[in-house]
Image 1 (cartoon, rainbow, N blue to C red):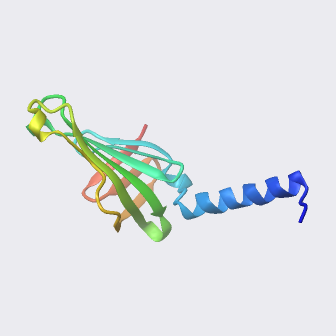
Image 2: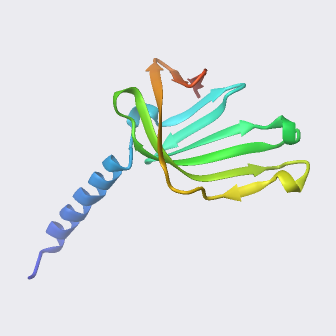
Length: 126
């Protein structure tokens, strides 16, 4: 069956938009949010990243968690951790870079102006 190119492009665009919506494209969370103790969250294009300073492992050590966002409906952030790593440790034995088993998790969150509350921390939009 022949299908004009513009029809195929419209179908492909629709499928991409549907995939992005399913992948947790949460416009309200888009951007970077910081807290001096709680670290920095970055959200965009259906993914998220949390970077925490981990001074117990060295002055420059950071724990980085990368997520695929499943949804952010009704004040509940549902995600899958895709990567967890510890970098810049004083002792290389404490450094790691892992892809944990794929498991869906969720945590409540709330937005108020330029503030995002996740867990015990309130993050300010940068």
